[in-house]
Image (cartoon, rainbow over all chains, first blue to last red; front, side):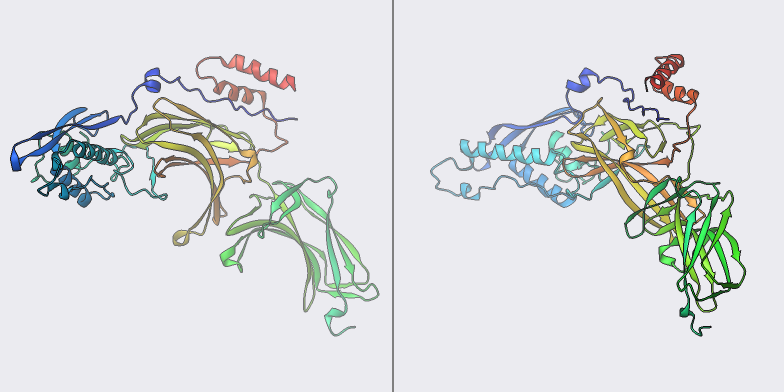
Length: 187
Length: 334
């Protein structure tokens, strides 16, 4: 008279591969801003910073890249992103105009402590852009994605990071400010 | 003889033959109250008697006929005037005349077809009832008695599992599996979610049961969605290769069997909604319909079907013979 006890055993699943469990995550991305170098003489002096990127995200053409950029390049990037992407772009460290005035007691914008402060701010700026939070549609609790069977290229992908200007800034030899803004498809 | 009919009236009482032995089932009415009603199945005979009790025993009651009806009808809330009767049986109990004293009349509706299950929903209700009527010139005296009908099914012949790979390219790929596509109301959903690719930062994952009541046809179709259950199955961020088990007991939830296009008036369907939420509160979901059915208490599964179910659990390892042994053992242990 009693019902058979329901079979509640787990479905069979293959054990997780140790490399999958302990290996690098599928969204590995490391970015560093380091090695400031001041080049030039007198009024034409400027500081460049080394930007090192290591990643396994498929959208990046190079899995490791190293480029040198100056502060005005960062300003250009910020302007491009603000205009083209729908996200709130994080702020850059200050322009430090007061440091560029004459008759200062210190080295102005070539002061070691200032350069270090700026370096840290630039690194934070790039990290914020590249973390999935800022480079996506504005966070909202009613943003919903349907999961589909057939593989569709979905516009406005949650892991966007597909702005041409960003890729050029991070991985190309130099920044071509006359480029055509566009979105990158799969590398 | 009284000129106004309120001079004499009567009370009607409907009593079923098997009132003592017949089971009752709980049913929630339109106003949310739970009540118990006599439970019937398709094909069962509905029989009993009606007691007509005169309010004033010294006066006569003139009437235009006494009858009893068995009605099955669908009522759409937005169209209350129209009752769609899909079962309508009537038995005349007395020809026009007069009652000099309280009287009892027997009735029997033999092997009544009751094709659909009793249902009370958001926009529609389906009910079965007996209605005894003493017809009079000015106003009838009537009494209704609602009954509840359950539709039973046996274990489905074909009950394949649901298994699919879904996702967003380069972002999230999962394979989900539910052990069956048809579940009875006291069943357990056993499944798993296997992560093939995880690039987003997932915070947690849940499975919801959604009931969708659809009324209307053509251009005026209306869906009413109701989340019956929300059940968290994972807390934290998974990585590639991880498998998350699902075990969801349905008996704890108030659900009805799946009802498809009932009398072309309405449907009640159930969906499993798998939802993943990431650190930015974005939601990723996959909805899948399941069929719910009502298992009869009286229905006993055959041994061979139990063994088949047991054998299905073993993917390529144990033979069906050992599964049969295991099933036999379980029966003996009780």
